[in-house]
Image (cartoon, rainbow, N blue to C red; front, top):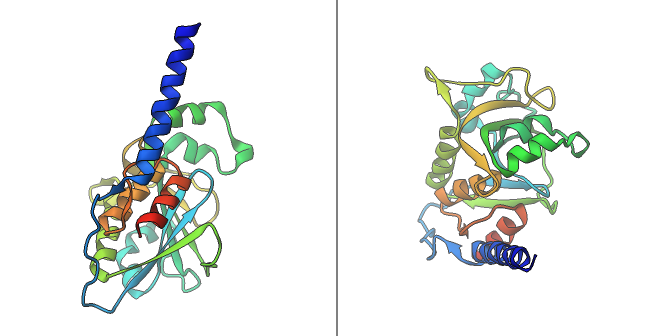
Length: 223
């Protein structure tokens, strides 16, 4: 019994240390020079809930053209009412089978805590209140924004050049799930994907951010 207790305490200590180090050790370790001469910036949003984060990019003439490949799957990119494109990466079972907390079931939770296939979730939104505590905004230079966009688009699985929609998978009328690259697990999940996407565009995060709360704190600390 004492041996089991010691092992349990050691595991908890390792997890706490890893979470702390992952939050308070920046990645990259040294800040990049983001003081370019261009005065033009592109604004993106980070949308958070207690367990998940989405990247939200503005829908304008350029991004509507860049993401026109989503139209064939029912995402109304060209609709002038749509002002933002909401994109997230996550575990297939949990993402598809848990649209609300009341839909929570044991098997998707088990898959999320072990290993699962990944999917991309895409939705559109109208105006958004950027003062809401669940929303954080960033200004990026055009080259940084394009790097972020390229990272997101590369996350979609393609078959003969076309993204692969998952049939009858979505929470509402205008959103859709797609096959994605990578495997989901508790250590490398939706929030570490978000952090990696932001880092690709020069935004510093913590070294390891498995939760929205640790990602949010590291973003405040290092940016």
